[in-house]
Amino acid sequence: MGIFSRMTDIINSNLNSLLDSAEDPEKMIRLIIQEMEDTLVEVRSSSARVMADRKTASRQVQRLMDEAEQWEAKAKLAISKEREDLARAALLEKQAILEDVEKLETELVALDEHIEHLHDEVAQLQQKLSDAKAKRKAMQMRSKTVQTRMKVKRQVQREVLDDAFKKFDRFERRMDNLEGELEAMDLGREHKDLASEIDALAEDEKVEEELSRLKAEMQSGSTKENQGKPE
Image (cartoon, rainbow, N blue to C red):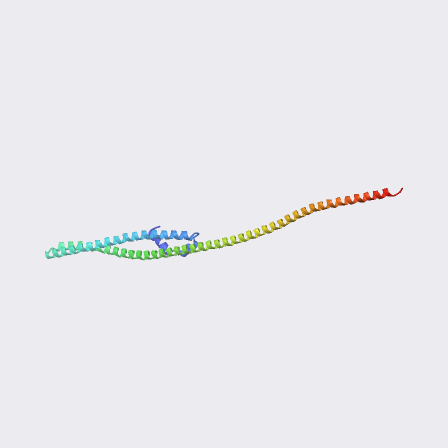
């Protein structure tokens, strides 16, 4: 693809539609800007060559015009010397030079039109480049804003989760404390019941001893009564 056809494609392209159809708009606009900048450098370089060609052609026209004037002066001199043959020859040289001048002037007109066209397209390309850079800056700012919002949102969600976890930990700790208290109460109760049972056994033993003593006394008394009775 030539420089000018590529430049025309860029100028006629719709930047928004290109970005909408791209999978990665930021990468796409970066490539577009690079393409525009490269094309702009090439076009300006080409414009410089065209303007240099115009200056060269303009100098050639001026040089040829000077030569034509010189041949006219020679023709006048020949006429003054009554040498019409030389005058005709001088005028023929002048005519040939003027034909070359006419061709160069036609070329100059074409170069001027080309230069003007280049200036217009460079201006359009420069405007497109400015729009692309502005679009890229807007996209970067938008991306930065989205990233900031995402970061804040994640932070808020993280804080909500942390708060939920803290509440759960506090609830779990509270349940642990309640279960500990309940277990402590059960342990105290079991210890108390065990001591009571042991004490009860001691009491039972005393009662049994007392009961045995009474039985023995009663049995002894009964025996004595039976012995005191006559047969």
